[in-house]
Amino acid sequence: MAQKPSIPKGTRDFNPVEAARRNYIFDTIRSVFKQFGYAPIETPAMENLSTLLGKYGEEGDKLLFKILNSGNSFAPVSGLVPDNPDEKDSAALSLKVCEKGLRYDLTVPFARFVVQHQNELVFPFKRYQLQPVWRADRPQKGRYREFYQCDADVIGSDSMYNELEMAQLVDSVFSKFGIRVLLKINNRKVLSGIAGIMGCPGQIIDITVAIDKLDKTSLEAVKEELYEKGISAQAVAVLEPLLLFQGNSGQKIAFLRSLFEGGASEIGMEGVRELETLFELIDKTGVSQEVELDLSLARGLNYYTGAIFEVKSLDFSIGSICGGGRYDDLTGIFGLKDMSGVGISFGADRIYDVLLGLDRFPPEVQDAPVVLFFNMGESESVRALRYIKSLRDSGIAAELYPDPAKMKKQFDYASRRGIAFAAIIGETELAEGTVTVKNLVTGEQETIGSGQLLNKFGM
Image (cartoon, rainbow, N blue to C red; front, side, top):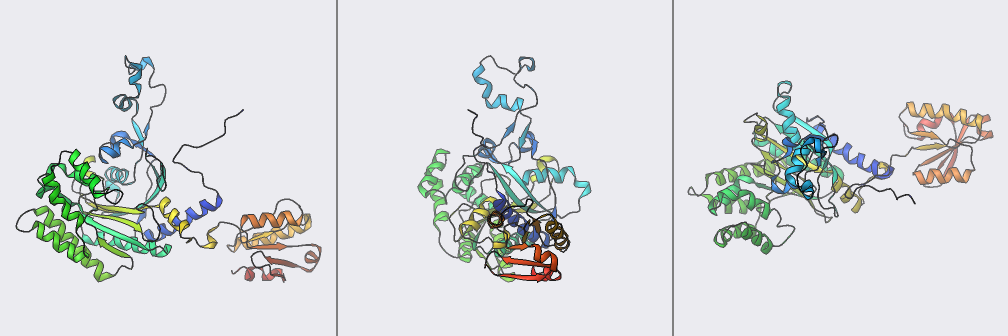
């Protein structure tokens, strides 16, 4: 018996309704990006592995999908097969036989793009990108191995107005979706300052990776991970008040200032000043969504150096649905120094789950034709095709049922497709130049002249 077809875990097929809803998400986000002056780019699904490795931290590197080189990479002629066949799956060998990998995110490929095309671009360069990414993660609710990111970045400017614009993008996109969200903001310079006064300046990555898990686990679990990384109980005791501090954003900024004042940490104080500036700009320009300073927000990616952002839905339980931050020298790893940027990434798949869970997809999103002309015979269908062309030329989606079939079958087809109107041209309508139109939602039916079709369907 033939094996039942399947797809890899962590990937999905999308039926027409799902695909239409996803396009609604992409179109909405794209429209906001364009309103803010961002230009589209695209990059390949795969990058050289050397481009990707070392950019996402040790945990991120483990989640890279590596692509086996073309041909039989393990053949004896290649000289790569070890004496012990069990070592064929070793990490060292995989790097020899895998020169490419699927992109993990859109930011590192964007940095590579900027360096490669720097002489063609106008800086500051504002780009948006809507493409899939891949991570060899353990599939679970809201977490997939293949998913889309919708990114917007400004590179070539260190102005705090760009951080403000990230907050405004979040506000505009989720307001259009009708989703209430919480935008959480922190600054990696603050976290660097904390690591310094903890006496662990060289372990900033260990610290941020651990505290980034605080919203998914307990404080005790975070502390245990820090201990396992060799961070002393005395150092953790310095960090703990930061993670436990309660108050509004102004109170948190004052708390941070008290930690770093007197020369305790200049980089920490610089982060405090940046947070002050950003929250003042948000207050002055107005953002309708909730915004807070979250002192435990870390964002585990290595390349962030300044402001960091994360967005959570307030009315639907799921992980972060948007995130981003400032990176001062991501292009430097590709040879272009001092090119600061800031960006935000919208997780289309999680946004889909939120919209579905909250029933916020507009009913008209279903990409079905507005009207289906029934097939009542050859002459009637030829007349219908003339009307269909006129409707389509006016921007109204219309189609003809392709085969002469019983009325019930054609009604069932229209209903299952979610088509709003049925148009029927029988012998009488053919002779009189009319069309009988039935609203398949309300059941109302009327006969109109062919010249009234455009008005009937709202164009």
